[in-house]
Amino acid sequence: MKIFITGSSGYIGRELVKFLNSRYQIIEYDFASGQDILDYEQEIF
Image 1: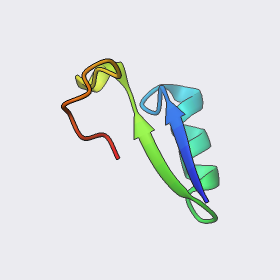
Image 2: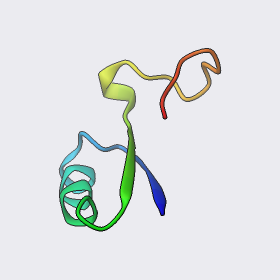
Image 3: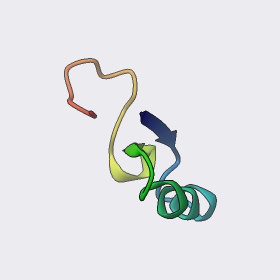
Image 4: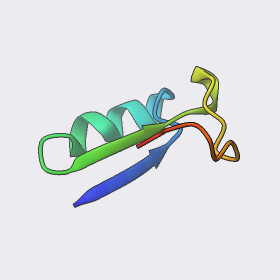
């Protein structure tokens, strides 16, 4: 199963990624790292 996590570089998001990473495929997204969810041309998956 794929799980999309927004805010993955924040404290809660980072811990959530660590917790779920061994069981699921995690797709991380964070505006702080320069990603823009409204920019449809960029590849985030």
